[in-house]
Length: 167
Ligand SMILES: CC(C)(COP(=O)(O)OP(=O)(O)OC[C@H]1O[C@@H](n2cnc3c(N)ncnc32)[C@H](O)[C@@H]1OP(=O)(O)O)[C@@H](O)C(=O)NCCC(=O)NCCS
Image 1 (cartoon, helix red, strand yellow):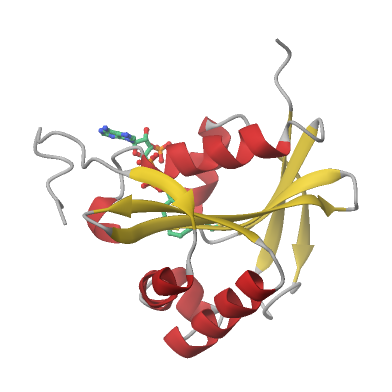
Image 2 (cartoon, protein in one colour; image 1 turned 30 degrees about the horizontal axis):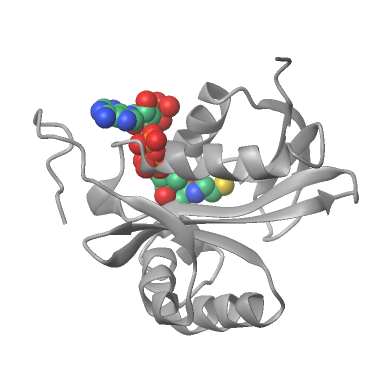
């Protein structure tokens, strides 16, 4: 994978498509290798099991494919927040290709799909995940709340919200 994102190299080409069973190992590895999800106790096995369960239940999980392998993903749920707002549940990109617009493309894809059915999107971001908070704010999300100790003790889950931009 091209990790030269900050040296003036061309961005790594990628395409977006739905997650398939054969992608589960790569996506689970992205999750388990990330210090964010490690803090939540995620392992390759637990991530793979969650992804398999998602596939079986018809979840919408889109991957960014680089060199014929999944290098990023987004999992989103129509009406997933209060049966009213779309919910972006998980998004992640392989560290080797971060900072090249793949996360942006995944988020935009999820937003375009969710905004066909709702006029708002919600997501949760950890209080310590400053980089992701900046990423979301840069895409128009505002913090509207915080839930202390919601998923793990000692961490606030910040509630981020975005309305469909007016056309
Ligand atoms: C958050 C995350 C999904 C973003 O993915 P990404 O592919 O790095 O996202 P992008 O490349 O689109 O944007 C990242 C930054 O690179 C910049 N960027 C995008 N394309 C670029 C390019 N061609 N050249 C230089 N910089 C670029 C963006 O402006 C952005 O800056 P910002 O974070 O200050 O807003 C990724 O960092 C990640 O997987 N993080 C760990 C998991 C995580 O925190 N998930 C969110 C949980 S709530």
